[in-house]
Amino acid sequence: TIENAAGKESKMLNDINGYTRTCGLIGNPVEHTLSPVIHNTLSMVLGENLAYVPFHVENGRLEDAVKGAFALNLLGLNVTVPYKSDVIPYLTDIDPLAENIGAVNTLVQTETGYKGYNTDMPGLYRAMCEDGVKVKGEKVLIRGAGGVARAVAMLLLDKGAREAILLNRTVQKAQEVADEVNRIAGRKFSKAMSVDAYDTLPAGKQYLAIQATSVGMYPHCDAAVIEDPAFYEKIHTGYDLIFNPPKTRFMELVEAQGGKAYNGAKMLLYQGIIAFELWTGCKVESWLADKVYERMQEAKKTEDGK
Ligand code: ATR
Image 1 (tube, rainbow, N blue to C red):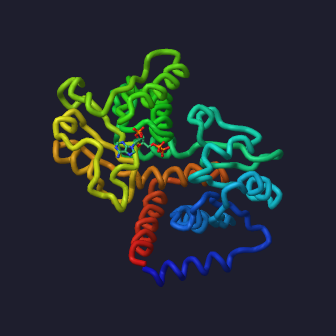
Image 2: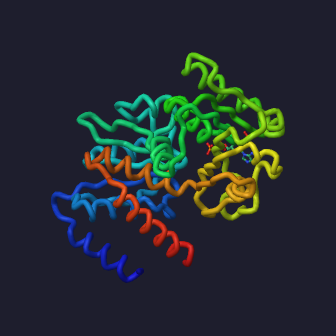
Image 3: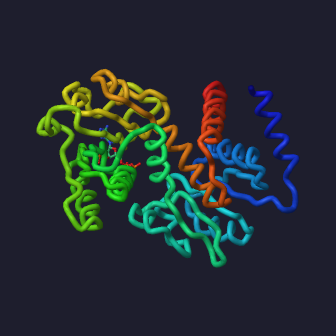
């Protein structure tokens, strides 16, 4: 497969010509990204004359990077850690969902500069739809209260969940997020809870749970914020936004109590696919999404084996 992969890549490089459009990723670091696999595979299969490359942007150089990208006529950029919020002042327009989330991961070229979008959350939602996980009308537990948890709460509001309970070690932080989400909702949609207070939740498998902390991420694979099976008895479906390792401790704990569990790999896939659709106007169908997903897994194995 490595030979095949190399063969395909070199064919694409040979296809670069005077009309090739460039997209890329800005962040620090960017070296372990799987995004080039997503976008270059899509370009090849769909016959788009587009190349996608990573750009390592040093701290303090973000404004220069965005201005430089526009000057170089780059069609679009993805933005990753640590610039997803910091990039906002350098945009000429912003999509309302991205604005509410407070984080932008995709820039799309316009006449005057870049418009910012958030495709992480729509990516999560499309992954959930593909996995058959329902959001509308659901009671949802969100683990964590950082930027990602906040974005998840906004998505759940947008997609018509019934309520979102933020469970966090620091309950004050969860309260701040809940207050902000409720302000945007104009009603009491979200509430905060300390991680030890889950026993007050009703019994029975009533909840969808979304794990939005970095706890359990490689190399700390044995970690989970809550170990008690009594918590996992309340969950019918668990979504961990972590994708490395592919089965997290949280997912094992959900499955041990008979729940369904998913990781964040498809969210990564679909955030890329939605960005590609914004840049090119193409619609990526399921069969192609599956093909890109396979190539991501192959690329990840190659990276892990290094
Ligand atoms: P991000 O913006 O990526 O969401 P973050 O703002 O650092 O990252 O948020 C990380 C989340 O993981 C927080 O909710 C944090 O809990 P606190 O608010 O109490 O700090 C949670 N978290 C991180 N490490 C944790 C741990 N060991 N146990 C419990 N929660 C943890």
